[in-house]
Length: 302
Image (cartoon, helix red, strand yellow):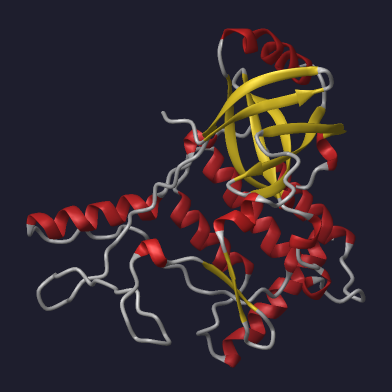
């Protein structure tokens, strides 16, 4: 694997030479734009909007458009003169409790490897010191001409750099908050907590798979081989109108327990939807008795 960056961790008076590698890779299936009639690839030309001529890559630069429409063209030397104090250095600023960092701030992850023999011992020293604490090292780093905050943490005996967003890059969330006058009953909260407890478990990412990507790969292989397309065995569930939260959550708990016990997940979901509320397709006349039944069930449970 090729390193994307070389530098050093500045850890007090200790310097740890390191190499940086991408820790993740996208597994999405990539498509090309083609002419449907014959499958020919679609090509794009780089055309200047002023003279209408095609522009080679060597003549393409970076420009910033001002509010008044003026274009400021920046040369490579302009970027080279910018004051990136953390260039080629991962500068440790402070150590912060891990539980104070909201995942909303976290971005791409990178593996850090000691660069050369002399860097091995201070690398292991920092790794072991972080491993035995509940702290992350808050750092500042410049990757690909962009300065960012970041976190140093451990994963599988390796130091990981987790790039972060700046505070002004996280949008204000107040617009998404529900009305403050919404009241939740104790029974509703208790059933929600019961549902959470039913699905509580240790994080094991290996048990989850990208079913959409797998189906898409099967589709491409089938079309390439000229064989019938694979049929989907997923059952469609009807959209249900929630009448009583307690009844709906109780049905969800029962369905979750059935799935944990190895039951069929699809019928369980359908049963939960039917038990929680009537389907929207039902007539108004049929909805009335269902509401009464749900209310009676709620009174009995209370």
